[in-house]
Length: 196
Length: 257
Image (cartoon, rainbow over all chains, first blue to last red; front, side, top):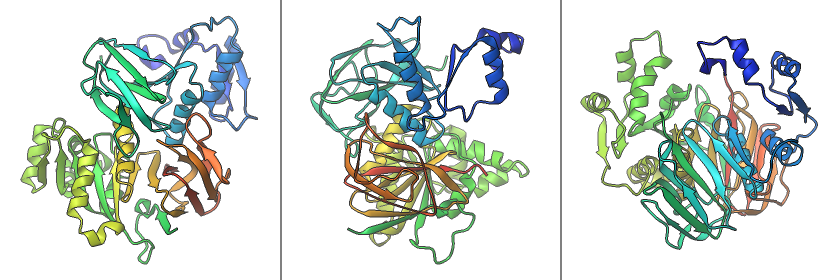
Protein backbone atom coordinates (compact mmCIF):
# COMPACT_ATOMS: atom_id res chain seq x y z
CA UNK A 1 0.00 0.00 0.00
CA UNK A 2 2.75 2.54 0.80
CA UNK A 3 4.11 2.01 -2.73
CA UNK A 4 0.86 3.39 -4.16
CA UNK A 5 1.40 6.61 -2.19
CA UNK A 6 5.10 7.31 -2.63
CA UNK A 7 4.80 10.91 -1.47
CA UNK A 8 3.33 9.93 1.87
CA UNK A 9 4.87 8.51 4.99
CA UNK A 10 4.66 4.70 4.90
CA UNK A 11 3.45 4.42 8.51
CA UNK A 12 0.59 6.83 7.84
CA UNK A 13 -0.49 4.82 4.81
CA UNK A 14 -0.33 1.57 6.75
CA UNK A 15 -2.51 2.97 9.54
CA UNK A 16 -5.04 4.22 7.02
CA UNK A 17 -5.22 0.88 5.21
CA UNK A 18 -5.78 -1.32 8.23
CA UNK A 19 -7.65 -4.56 7.53
CA UNK A 20 -10.66 -5.36 9.73
CA UNK A 21 -9.78 -9.07 9.76
CA UNK A 22 -6.78 -11.25 9.04
CA UNK A 23 -7.82 -14.82 8.55
CA UNK A 24 -6.29 -18.04 7.32
CA UNK A 25 -3.84 -20.71 8.28
CA UNK A 26 -1.18 -18.12 9.12
CA UNK A 27 1.68 -19.92 7.41
CA UNK A 28 2.64 -16.96 5.19
CA UNK A 29 2.03 -13.79 7.20
CA UNK A 30 5.23 -12.30 8.63
CA UNK A 31 5.36 -12.01 12.39
CA UNK A 32 6.00 -8.26 12.43
CA UNK A 33 3.07 -7.69 10.05
CA UNK A 34 0.75 -9.75 12.27
CA UNK A 35 1.85 -7.87 15.37
CA UNK A 36 1.54 -4.47 13.67
CA UNK A 37 -2.08 -5.04 12.68
CA UNK A 38 -3.00 -6.83 15.92
CA UNK A 39 -1.75 -3.77 17.82
CA UNK A 40 -4.02 -1.56 15.68
CA UNK A 41 -7.07 -3.65 16.54
CA UNK A 42 -7.40 -5.92 13.49
CA UNK A 43 -9.26 -9.12 14.37
CA UNK A 44 -6.96 -12.09 13.90
CA UNK A 45 -8.73 -15.36 13.10
CA UNK A 46 -6.31 -18.24 13.15
CA UNK A 47 -7.58 -21.17 11.11
CA UNK A 48 -4.34 -23.10 10.97
CA UNK A 49 -6.10 -26.25 12.16
CA UNK A 50 -8.29 -26.28 9.06
CA UNK A 51 -6.29 -27.70 6.18
CA UNK A 52 -9.33 -28.74 4.14
CA UNK A 53 -10.23 -25.39 2.65
CA UNK A 54 -8.31 -22.66 0.88
CA UNK A 55 -7.63 -19.29 2.50
CA UNK A 56 -10.19 -17.71 0.16
CA UNK A 57 -12.79 -20.28 1.14
CA UNK A 58 -12.17 -19.47 4.82
CA UNK A 59 -12.61 -15.76 4.16
CA UNK A 60 -15.81 -16.17 2.17
CA UNK A 61 -17.23 -18.37 4.93
CA UNK A 62 -16.26 -15.76 7.52
CA UNK A 63 -17.98 -12.99 5.55
CA UNK A 64 -21.07 -15.11 5.05
CA UNK A 65 -21.38 -16.35 8.64
CA UNK A 66 -19.56 -14.17 11.08
CA UNK A 67 -18.96 -10.65 9.91
CA UNK A 68 -20.98 -8.42 12.18
CA UNK A 69 -22.08 -4.95 11.19
CA UNK A 70 -22.12 -5.92 7.54
CA UNK A 71 -25.33 -5.58 5.52
CA UNK A 72 -25.41 -8.95 3.81
CA UNK A 73 -28.62 -8.48 1.88
CA UNK A 74 -26.77 -7.19 -1.15
CA UNK A 75 -23.32 -8.48 -0.61
CA UNK A 76 -20.57 -8.56 -3.24
CA UNK A 77 -17.16 -9.89 -2.34
CA UNK A 78 -14.22 -8.43 -4.30
CA UNK A 79 -11.11 -10.60 -4.32
CA UNK A 80 -7.61 -9.44 -5.25
CA UNK A 81 -4.74 -11.83 -5.72
CA UNK A 82 -6.77 -14.91 -6.67
CA UNK A 83 -5.08 -15.31 -10.04
CA UNK A 84 -1.46 -15.80 -11.04
CA UNK A 85 1.01 -17.61 -8.84
CA UNK A 86 0.57 -21.32 -8.34
CA UNK A 87 -1.93 -22.75 -10.79
CA UNK A 88 -3.48 -25.16 -8.30
CA UNK A 89 -4.19 -22.18 -6.03
CA UNK A 90 -5.80 -20.32 -8.91
CA UNK A 91 -8.02 -23.31 -9.69
CA UNK A 92 -8.88 -23.69 -6.01
CA UNK A 93 -9.97 -20.04 -6.01
CA UNK A 94 -12.10 -20.51 -9.14
CA UNK A 95 -13.66 -23.47 -7.41
CA UNK A 96 -14.58 -21.27 -4.44
CA UNK A 97 -16.72 -19.04 -6.64
CA UNK A 98 -18.32 -22.15 -8.13
CA UNK A 99 -19.06 -23.60 -4.69
CA UNK A 100 -20.52 -20.33 -3.42
CA UNK A 101 -22.51 -19.85 -6.62
CA UNK A 102 -25.34 -18.11 -4.75
CA UNK A 103 -22.97 -15.33 -3.66
CA UNK A 104 -21.58 -12.48 -5.77
CA UNK A 105 -17.82 -12.96 -5.73
CA UNK A 106 -15.57 -11.12 -8.21
CA UNK A 107 -11.97 -12.18 -8.76
CA UNK A 108 -9.73 -9.32 -9.92
CA UNK A 109 -6.28 -9.08 -11.40
CA UNK A 110 -4.53 -6.18 -13.11
CA UNK A 111 -5.80 -7.46 -16.46
CA UNK A 112 -9.16 -9.10 -15.93
CA UNK A 113 -12.14 -9.65 -13.72
CA UNK A 114 -14.08 -12.88 -13.40
CA UNK A 115 -17.38 -13.80 -11.84
CA UNK A 116 -19.83 -16.63 -12.09
CA UNK A 117 -23.13 -16.44 -13.99
CA UNK A 118 -25.27 -19.09 -12.29
CA UNK A 119 -27.47 -21.10 -14.63
CA UNK A 120 -30.51 -20.37 -12.48
CA UNK A 121 -30.79 -16.81 -13.85
CA UNK A 122 -30.86 -14.85 -17.08
CA UNK A 123 -28.11 -12.27 -16.80
CA UNK A 124 -27.77 -8.64 -17.79
CA UNK A 125 -24.23 -7.34 -17.66
CA UNK A 126 -23.99 -3.55 -17.81
CA UNK A 127 -20.58 -2.78 -19.24
CA UNK A 128 -18.68 0.10 -17.66
CA UNK A 129 -16.88 1.02 -20.85
CA UNK A 130 -14.64 3.59 -19.18
CA UNK A 131 -12.95 0.90 -17.10
CA UNK A 132 -13.55 -2.48 -18.70
CA UNK A 133 -13.64 -4.30 -22.01
CA UNK A 134 -13.73 -4.84 -24.84
CA UNK A 135 -12.11 -8.29 -24.55
CA UNK A 136 -14.30 -10.86 -22.86
CA UNK A 137 -15.14 -14.52 -22.62
CA UNK A 138 -17.67 -17.05 -21.36
CA UNK A 139 -16.18 -20.24 -19.96
CA UNK A 140 -18.03 -23.50 -19.19
CA UNK A 141 -15.55 -24.35 -16.47
CA UNK A 142 -17.18 -27.32 -14.78
CA UNK A 143 -19.61 -28.92 -17.20
CA UNK A 144 -20.30 -28.71 -20.91
CA UNK A 145 -23.07 -26.34 -21.90
CA UNK A 146 -25.61 -27.78 -24.29
CA UNK A 147 -27.11 -24.38 -24.93
CA UNK A 148 -25.97 -20.83 -24.25
CA UNK A 149 -27.39 -17.64 -25.74
CA UNK A 150 -26.03 -14.11 -25.62
CA UNK A 151 -26.65 -10.63 -26.96
CA UNK A 152 -24.25 -7.70 -27.10
CA UNK A 153 -21.12 -9.57 -28.12
CA UNK A 154 -19.23 -9.54 -31.42
CA UNK A 155 -19.63 -13.31 -31.63
CA UNK A 156 -22.94 -13.97 -29.93
CA UNK A 157 -23.97 -17.44 -28.92
CA UNK A 158 -27.34 -18.65 -30.16
CA UNK A 159 -28.39 -21.85 -28.39
CA UNK A 160 -24.75 -22.73 -28.94
CA UNK A 161 -23.04 -25.67 -27.30
CA UNK A 162 -19.76 -24.97 -25.52
CA UNK A 163 -17.27 -27.31 -23.91
CA UNK A 164 -13.59 -27.75 -23.24
CA UNK A 165 -12.15 -29.58 -26.19
CA UNK A 166 -14.56 -27.77 -28.44
CA UNK A 167 -15.90 -24.24 -28.54
CA UNK A 168 -15.16 -21.98 -25.57
CA UNK A 169 -15.97 -18.31 -26.01
CA UNK A 170 -12.64 -16.51 -25.58
CA UNK A 171 -11.19 -13.46 -27.34
CA UNK A 172 -14.77 -12.26 -27.73
CA UNK A 173 -15.52 -8.55 -27.90
CA UNK A 174 -18.20 -6.54 -26.10
CA UNK A 175 -20.15 -4.62 -28.73
CA UNK A 176 -22.86 -2.91 -26.72
CA UNK A 177 -23.18 -1.46 -23.24
CA UNK A 178 -25.42 -4.30 -22.20
CA UNK A 179 -24.61 -7.97 -22.59
CA UNK A 180 -27.19 -10.63 -21.85
CA UNK A 181 -26.39 -14.27 -21.11
CA UNK A 182 -28.49 -17.32 -20.45
CA UNK A 183 -27.23 -20.84 -20.25
CA UNK A 184 -28.06 -24.33 -19.06
CA UNK A 185 -24.89 -24.39 -16.97
CA UNK A 186 -22.87 -22.11 -14.70
CA UNK A 187 -20.56 -19.99 -16.84
CA UNK A 188 -17.55 -17.91 -15.87
CA UNK A 189 -17.77 -14.38 -17.29
CA UNK A 190 -14.46 -12.64 -17.78
CA UNK A 191 -13.75 -9.17 -19.13
CA UNK A 192 -10.53 -7.23 -19.55
CA UNK A 193 -9.81 -4.26 -17.31
CA UNK A 194 -8.56 -1.15 -19.11
CA UNK A 195 -5.10 0.13 -18.39
CA UNK A 196 -5.74 3.75 -17.45
CA UNK B 1 -5.59 -49.52 -20.91
CA UNK B 2 -2.19 -48.28 -22.01
CA UNK B 3 0.26 -46.64 -19.66
CA UNK B 4 1.52 -43.13 -20.41
CA UNK B 5 4.71 -41.90 -18.77
CA UNK B 6 5.40 -38.29 -17.88
CA UNK B 7 8.54 -36.63 -16.61
CA UNK B 8 9.63 -33.00 -16.45
CA UNK B 9 13.11 -33.70 -17.76
CA UNK B 10 12.88 -30.51 -19.83
CA UNK B 11 13.48 -28.64 -16.57
CA UNK B 12 16.76 -30.46 -15.93
CA UNK B 13 20.05 -28.94 -17.10
CA UNK B 14 20.71 -32.03 -19.19
CA UNK B 15 18.31 -34.76 -20.17
CA UNK B 16 19.59 -38.23 -19.18
CA UNK B 17 20.61 -40.19 -22.30
CA UNK B 18 18.45 -43.28 -22.00
CA UNK B 19 15.60 -41.54 -20.34
CA UNK B 20 12.16 -42.94 -21.09
CA UNK B 21 10.04 -41.68 -22.74
CA UNK B 22 12.44 -40.24 -25.29
CA UNK B 23 10.85 -37.07 -26.57
CA UNK B 24 11.50 -34.37 -29.13
CA UNK B 25 10.73 -30.93 -27.80
CA UNK B 26 9.30 -27.90 -29.53
CA UNK B 27 9.00 -24.55 -27.76
CA UNK B 28 6.26 -21.97 -28.27
CA UNK B 29 6.73 -18.54 -26.71
CA UNK B 30 3.57 -16.52 -26.12
CA UNK B 31 3.30 -12.85 -25.19
CA UNK B 32 3.92 -12.87 -21.43
CA UNK B 33 7.07 -12.30 -19.40
CA UNK B 34 9.59 -15.07 -20.12
CA UNK B 35 9.97 -17.56 -17.27
CA UNK B 36 13.43 -17.46 -15.68
CA UNK B 37 14.24 -20.91 -17.13
CA UNK B 38 13.35 -19.93 -20.72
CA UNK B 39 16.95 -20.43 -21.93
CA UNK B 40 16.84 -24.00 -20.60
CA UNK B 41 13.64 -24.76 -22.51
CA UNK B 42 15.16 -23.16 -25.60
CA UNK B 43 18.22 -25.41 -25.28
CA UNK B 44 16.16 -28.61 -25.14
CA UNK B 45 13.91 -27.67 -28.05
CA UNK B 46 14.61 -28.64 -31.62
CA UNK B 47 12.03 -26.22 -32.97
CA UNK B 48 11.41 -22.78 -31.49
CA UNK B 49 8.37 -20.73 -32.38
CA UNK B 50 7.20 -17.33 -31.25
CA UNK B 51 3.51 -16.60 -31.39
CA UNK B 52 3.19 -12.99 -32.52
CA UNK B 53 4.10 -10.81 -29.49
CA UNK B 54 6.10 -13.68 -28.04
CA UNK B 55 8.83 -12.50 -30.41
CA UNK B 56 8.86 -9.14 -28.60
CA UNK B 57 9.41 -11.03 -25.34
CA UNK B 58 12.35 -13.02 -26.70
CA UNK B 59 13.86 -9.87 -28.22
CA UNK B 60 13.41 -7.73 -25.09
CA UNK B 61 13.85 -10.24 -22.29
CA UNK B 62 16.40 -12.88 -23.33
CA UNK B 63 19.20 -10.31 -23.01
CA UNK B 64 17.95 -9.54 -19.47
CA UNK B 65 18.59 -13.16 -18.51
CA UNK B 66 22.23 -12.75 -19.62
CA UNK B 67 23.10 -9.34 -18.20
CA UNK B 68 26.86 -9.80 -18.60
CA UNK B 69 26.58 -10.44 -22.31
CA UNK B 70 26.09 -8.15 -25.23
CA UNK B 71 22.37 -7.90 -26.04
CA UNK B 72 22.87 -8.32 -29.81
CA UNK B 73 24.86 -11.52 -29.28
CA UNK B 74 22.09 -12.92 -27.07
CA UNK B 75 19.43 -11.98 -29.63
CA UNK B 76 21.32 -13.70 -32.43
CA UNK B 77 21.79 -16.79 -30.31
CA UNK B 78 18.11 -16.97 -29.35
CA UNK B 79 16.66 -16.65 -32.81
CA UNK B 80 13.28 -18.32 -33.29
CA UNK B 81 12.86 -20.69 -36.21
CA UNK B 82 9.31 -19.46 -36.86
CA UNK B 83 7.14 -16.52 -35.93
CA UNK B 84 3.49 -17.39 -36.39
CA UNK B 85 0.25 -15.63 -35.59
CA UNK B 86 -1.98 -12.74 -36.51
CA UNK B 87 0.87 -10.24 -36.22
CA UNK B 88 -1.08 -7.61 -34.34
CA UNK B 89 1.31 -7.45 -31.38
CA UNK B 90 4.80 -7.97 -32.78
CA UNK B 91 6.76 -4.73 -33.17
CA UNK B 92 7.96 -3.90 -36.66
CA UNK B 93 11.62 -3.66 -35.69
CA UNK B 94 11.45 -7.06 -33.98
CA UNK B 95 9.82 -8.63 -37.03
CA UNK B 96 12.41 -7.06 -39.34
CA UNK B 97 15.29 -8.16 -37.08
CA UNK B 98 14.33 -11.82 -37.01
CA UNK B 99 13.32 -11.86 -40.66
CA UNK B 100 16.78 -10.57 -41.57
CA UNK B 101 18.28 -13.45 -39.56
CA UNK B 102 16.29 -16.02 -41.51
CA UNK B 103 13.35 -16.67 -39.18
CA UNK B 104 10.34 -17.98 -41.10
CA UNK B 105 7.44 -15.56 -40.80
CA UNK B 106 3.94 -17.00 -41.11
CA UNK B 107 1.29 -14.33 -41.23
CA UNK B 108 -2.07 -15.72 -40.16
CA UNK B 109 -3.80 -12.38 -39.72
CA UNK B 110 -6.68 -13.55 -41.88
CA UNK B 111 -7.51 -16.29 -39.39
CA UNK B 112 -9.40 -14.79 -36.46
CA UNK B 113 -11.05 -18.03 -35.40
CA UNK B 114 -8.17 -19.54 -33.47
CA UNK B 115 -5.79 -18.31 -30.79
CA UNK B 116 -2.12 -17.70 -31.54
CA UNK B 117 -1.26 -20.80 -29.52
CA UNK B 118 -3.70 -22.89 -31.53
CA UNK B 119 -2.08 -21.65 -34.76
CA UNK B 120 1.37 -22.62 -33.48
CA UNK B 121 0.26 -26.08 -32.39
CA UNK B 122 -1.38 -26.63 -35.78
CA UNK B 123 1.84 -25.54 -37.48
CA UNK B 124 3.91 -27.97 -35.39
CA UNK B 125 1.37 -30.74 -35.97
CA UNK B 126 1.48 -30.24 -39.73
CA UNK B 127 5.27 -29.86 -39.74
CA UNK B 128 6.13 -32.95 -37.70
CA UNK B 129 6.26 -36.25 -39.64
CA UNK B 130 3.50 -38.66 -38.55
CA UNK B 131 6.05 -41.12 -37.28
CA UNK B 132 7.32 -38.63 -34.72
CA UNK B 133 4.04 -37.22 -33.40
CA UNK B 134 3.80 -39.59 -30.47
CA UNK B 135 7.29 -38.65 -29.29
CA UNK B 136 6.68 -34.93 -29.68
CA UNK B 137 6.30 -32.67 -26.65
CA UNK B 138 5.39 -29.02 -27.07
CA UNK B 139 6.57 -26.70 -24.30
CA UNK B 140 4.66 -23.43 -24.04
CA UNK B 141 5.93 -20.38 -22.19
CA UNK B 142 3.60 -17.47 -21.44
CA UNK B 143 0.24 -19.26 -21.62
CA UNK B 144 -0.79 -18.18 -18.12
CA UNK B 145 -1.23 -14.74 -16.60
CA UNK B 146 -2.37 -11.73 -18.54
CA UNK B 147 -5.91 -11.64 -19.89
CA UNK B 148 -7.98 -14.39 -18.35
CA UNK B 149 -9.93 -15.22 -21.48
CA UNK B 150 -6.57 -15.84 -23.18
CA UNK B 151 -5.52 -18.15 -20.36
CA UNK B 152 -8.76 -20.12 -20.67
CA UNK B 153 -8.37 -20.27 -24.45
CA UNK B 154 -4.87 -21.67 -23.94
CA UNK B 155 -6.13 -24.31 -21.48
CA UNK B 156 -8.74 -25.24 -24.06
CA UNK B 157 -5.99 -25.85 -26.61
CA UNK B 158 -4.73 -28.70 -24.38
CA UNK B 159 -8.16 -30.30 -24.62
CA UNK B 160 -8.51 -29.69 -28.35
CA UNK B 161 -5.17 -31.41 -28.99
CA UNK B 162 -5.54 -34.10 -26.33
CA UNK B 163 -3.47 -36.61 -28.32
CA UNK B 164 -0.43 -34.29 -28.26
CA UNK B 165 1.88 -33.75 -25.30
CA UNK B 166 1.63 -30.01 -24.57
CA UNK B 167 3.05 -28.50 -21.37
CA UNK B 168 2.12 -24.98 -20.26
CA UNK B 169 4.81 -23.35 -18.14
CA UNK B 170 4.95 -20.30 -15.93
CA UNK B 171 7.54 -19.29 -13.34
CA UNK B 172 5.44 -21.00 -10.68
CA UNK B 173 3.76 -24.01 -12.22
CA UNK B 174 3.55 -26.42 -15.08
CA UNK B 175 0.34 -27.91 -16.42
CA UNK B 176 -0.49 -30.71 -18.83
CA UNK B 177 -3.41 -32.89 -19.72
CA UNK B 178 -3.78 -36.49 -18.54
CA UNK B 179 -6.10 -37.99 -21.16
CA UNK B 180 -8.73 -40.38 -19.82
CA UNK B 181 -7.69 -42.93 -22.44
CA UNK B 182 -4.57 -43.88 -20.48
CA UNK B 183 -3.30 -44.78 -17.04
CA UNK B 184 -0.62 -42.29 -16.09
CA UNK B 185 2.72 -42.54 -14.36
CA UNK B 186 4.24 -39.21 -13.47
CA UNK B 187 7.92 -39.40 -12.50
CA UNK B 188 8.58 -36.44 -10.22
CA UNK B 189 11.85 -34.60 -10.76
CA UNK B 190 12.16 -33.54 -7.14
CA UNK B 191 15.17 -31.31 -7.78
CA UNK B 192 13.08 -28.94 -9.92
CA UNK B 193 9.40 -29.50 -9.19
CA UNK B 194 6.92 -30.04 -6.40
CA UNK B 195 5.75 -30.64 -3.81
CA UNK B 196 2.56 -28.64 -4.42
CA UNK B 197 0.31 -30.18 -7.02
CA UNK B 198 -3.26 -30.59 -8.15
CA UNK B 199 -5.62 -32.53 -10.40
CA UNK B 200 -8.27 -30.37 -11.99
CA UNK B 201 -11.41 -31.63 -13.77
CA UNK B 202 -11.91 -28.68 -16.11
CA UNK B 203 -14.84 -28.83 -18.44
CA UNK B 204 -16.47 -32.03 -17.28
CA UNK B 205 -17.02 -33.62 -13.86
CA UNK B 206 -15.13 -36.77 -13.02
CA UNK B 207 -17.19 -39.60 -11.54
CA UNK B 208 -14.15 -41.58 -10.58
CA UNK B 209 -10.46 -40.74 -10.25
CA UNK B 210 -7.79 -42.75 -8.45
CA UNK B 211 -4.24 -41.80 -7.57
CA UNK B 212 -1.18 -43.03 -5.72
CA UNK B 213 1.78 -41.00 -4.53
CA UNK B 214 -0.08 -37.96 -3.21
CA UNK B 215 -0.63 -36.79 0.34
CA UNK B 216 -4.36 -36.84 -0.26
CA UNK B 217 -4.89 -39.64 -2.75
CA UNK B 218 -8.10 -40.07 -4.66
CA UNK B 219 -9.80 -43.44 -4.47
CA UNK B 220 -12.60 -43.75 -7.03
CA UNK B 221 -13.32 -40.21 -5.91
CA UNK B 222 -15.71 -37.85 -7.62
CA UNK B 223 -14.38 -34.43 -8.58
CA UNK B 224 -16.07 -31.41 -10.13
CA UNK B 225 -16.06 -27.64 -10.10
CA UNK B 226 -18.47 -26.60 -7.39
CA UNK B 227 -17.50 -29.64 -5.36
CA UNK B 228 -14.17 -31.31 -4.73
CA UNK B 229 -11.18 -30.57 -6.89
CA UNK B 230 -7.71 -31.66 -5.89
CA UNK B 231 -5.75 -28.46 -5.27
CA UNK B 232 -3.08 -27.75 -2.63
CA UNK B 233 -2.18 -31.42 -2.75
CA UNK B 234 1.35 -32.60 -2.03
CA UNK B 235 3.54 -35.08 -3.89
CA UNK B 236 4.95 -37.72 -1.57
CA UNK B 237 7.81 -39.62 -3.15
CA UNK B 238 8.95 -39.79 -6.74
CA UNK B 239 6.10 -41.44 -8.59
CA UNK B 240 2.48 -40.45 -8.90
CA UNK B 241 -0.09 -42.55 -10.73
CA UNK B 242 -3.43 -41.28 -11.98
CA UNK B 243 -6.39 -42.86 -13.68
CA UNK B 244 -9.70 -41.22 -14.31
CA UNK B 245 -12.88 -41.44 -16.34
CA UNK B 246 -12.27 -37.92 -17.65
CA UNK B 247 -9.41 -35.81 -18.96
CA UNK B 248 -7.71 -34.16 -15.99
CA UNK B 249 -5.25 -31.29 -15.82
CA UNK B 250 -2.16 -32.15 -13.79
CA UNK B 251 -0.35 -29.19 -12.27
CA UNK B 252 2.77 -29.10 -10.13
CA UNK B 253 4.76 -26.23 -8.68
CA UNK B 254 8.18 -25.37 -10.08
CA UNK B 255 10.90 -24.84 -7.51
CA UNK B 256 12.52 -21.43 -7.28
CA UNK B 257 16.20 -22.20 -7.64
